[in-house]
Image (cartoon, rainbow, N blue to C red; front, side, top):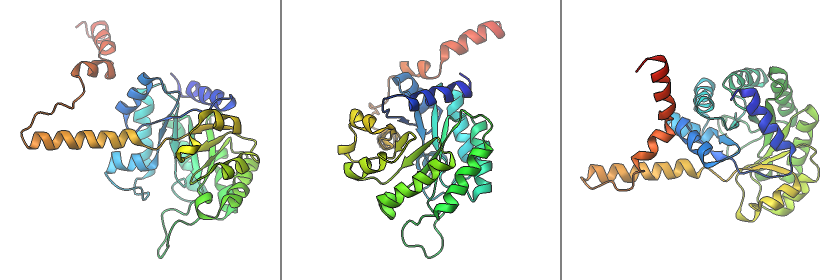
Length: 283
């Protein structure tokens, strides 16, 4: 499926009345698994990309080129619309323009640009936010840089956990006014703040990982939340499985927790490759 078609599918979902939980993916194989499981959308976070590509923590150590290439590997392997966490756009507003260009060419359906000051400056104690004006400049630059108008640009803030819900509302209203297609809220803790926030927004709302009381999809949908993350458990589960298997093999023990090998041909689309081999290689 072409990137434009995936973007239109995501926009249709954002314009609908439901709230979706996207699959947290980190490479081509996890994206295939998400597609086969029936997920409507997928999410590549900066933290999972950093772990998968670099084995490094979420400190914006991964470069734009590395992140975009990982996104490209995912989009070529599946037809699920991919939402990506583009962090702070890898620099200032001009860097944001380059970020949008690279990620759009990588086939993503949506990207978020956040207003956290990244990477952490010297002497910083805890997370800090950019000025609202700089955040608006980044959103305007992102919108100007996209070529396909179906690509979703979302303004993201972690203000609820840093400066409070009122500042989050003020910031996201500004991003909405600047033309953002959606707003992404991270660090939310309770229903009262979410309800106060959603009452002021006129664009779709996306949520980062939230407490259990906020995972009621019908409740979220009624407030205008269209995408809600559930954390990044697939990568954590994969790390645990690989770790357990490695330890057993190192100790000469049977590794009986592995997936049935018969499932691998399905994930690798072996039947398609066999057909292509017969048709094009006369195999």
